[in-house]
Length: 242
Image (tube, rainbow, N blue to C red; front, side, top):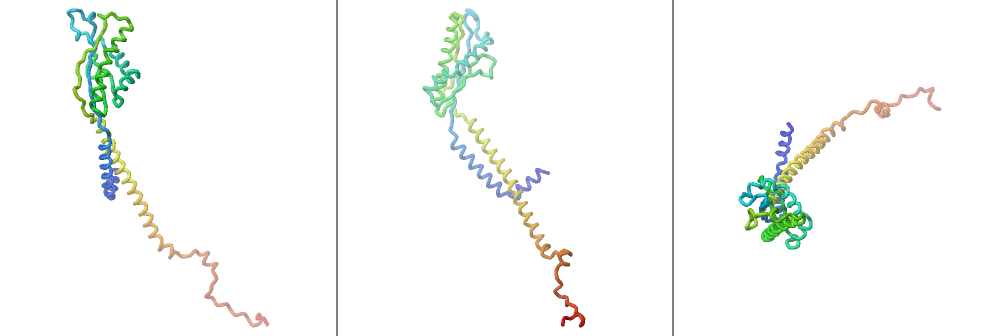
């Protein structure tokens, strides 16, 4: 029943709906034009076990399962403020993330750089890639880990060019469109309710006006009014003043 009432309101005030949808289209166009385009570049590094743990004839890819703890420490170090500040000196308009690749079970570091400039995105990605093995080496050097027992990184995948990132713009467009359509429907229903209420009050006022003019006066008020049409009775001759 409530949905049927809303649909009737929208049908009666269809011109408000059309106006709201047109304004929503204009809003979406402005968002499309004014939202800056961003470019994304990604790289993947795998944490390799030490030569001591693998052995001379061992396969390092069979020992990747124990590198998760080292990867967590490396991602935190790459996300530290001093490293971000160092990279921002050369790429001020770019941002990056260094996190574990959740799509795989191995110890793979996923680096994602984003910037309005595609070349800056690629430069930021390469700068973070260069920092990863240096940080890993410094952390192990601080603990005096023997060289043959140190873990390392190996480049797995690197983007050769930055790609446009349309996901953020699409999300903003969807939010703008949904907000415009929803606001149009709500305002249309409210305006229809107000207009119907005002029309109802005017109709009631018109129907009450003739009744008020022809309504009979109360009996008490009629009794108090002097009878102007009555002729006073004549006094007897003996009671007349001389």
